[in-house]
Image (cartoon, rainbow, N blue to C red):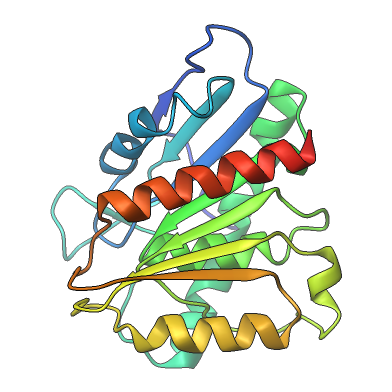
Length: 223
């Protein structure tokens, strides 16, 4: 394989104490890590007691952030660069997903992708292109980076998507949410959005609760 392999990160086992029946894959942002992203899991465990939470580190070290990682080197927000970046990082995440689903005897219907910032870009890219649809995609403070390979009939075979974004985000402007929503609807994807007024490049308690409930409901439909 020519792509870098995901080999480490953070995880939290199901609160029920049993074997995982669902997986929530948490994809961190640029310069962050799985160790940071896994902090979301304890706030979701009560609603998702049979769920394994996995928060891998991206396979590349981030030179701009000493202890952090990156899914790809983020040099700018030009649409072509973002689309190329997500495409280059996708094989490592797809391989990780394949490995974990096989390890636990689960399918895409038992998997939700949750991302923050650059992780949202990856979650949307992966979630809309898996051969079999995952249960749900939740994206915080990110955007859809491209629609190459996604036909207008994609909606019939795609997961429901929740996008949450702060109006005061100085890194990925709120306009990215509106653009992403428009593109997803054009593709026929079932997309829900929530605007967090006054919130910057972060996730507030309301956004966390909405994401948790969205994933729980999607898993319930897939059961």
